[in-house]
Amino acid sequence: MEQKPIKEQILLLIYLQALDTQIYALNKEKAAMPGQLKAIDNMIEAKKTGIKQTEENLKNIQLRLKEKEGSLQQKEEQIKKLQGQLFQLKTNKEYSTMLGEIGGIKADNSLMEEDIIKFMDEIDAARKKITEEKELLKSEEVKAQKQKEVINAKAADIEARLSEFNEKRNTITPNIEKQVMSRYERILKNKDGLAIVHIEGNSCGGCHMNLPPQVVSDAKMKESIIICGSCLRILYIEDNVEIN
Image 1: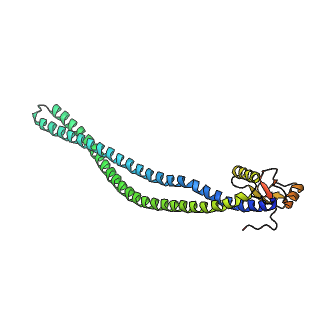
Image 2: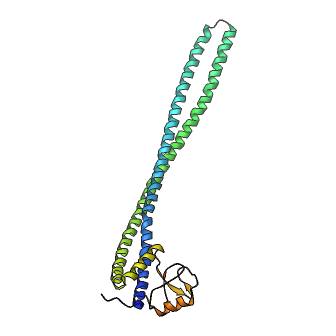
Image 3: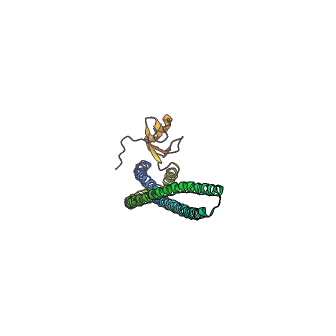
């Protein structure tokens, strides 16, 4: 195939860059989607883990309550036993000592009863929290599923647009000289998707560095591929150039 003059190849590169700018943007958006989906899954898993932790906390409180109730029962039985022995005592001193022992146990029981009430309150609060968190989780799961559907639909749309842009791209590249195309592709990769830029005044449209007058003059001629000495991007003059 007969290669087109440099002037026409530059026009093709300009149009190609317009396509590649969109392709790069779409690929960047596409690359972020797995992370977005993962973040949604992690959020749901974090809420599930939180519920499991609350359930484990509830089990621990229930176990401590059971232990405390068992201890209280033992102490109550001990009091009954000691009270039954009171009438068998022969001296006032023994009687007073026994009453003091019973009083001490009753004081301990009073503290344990306070702990039991506290544990029961904590159990009620934990159960309420679990119920609320599970209801919230259901709502969040529905919301998360919708978000994932939106992302997946967007991904499908991106794939369709990428296919369309790449088809257009494939109709352009055969008309560009291989050496020029190779240089363009290399710059495109190294410069984050921006290989050819227009000259703004006397400055590079890519790195905005001032250009020597000879470079600007050579770019106006459109007889060869002109490169920015600072950022190494391809330069062109925008005057009278149309991008369809």
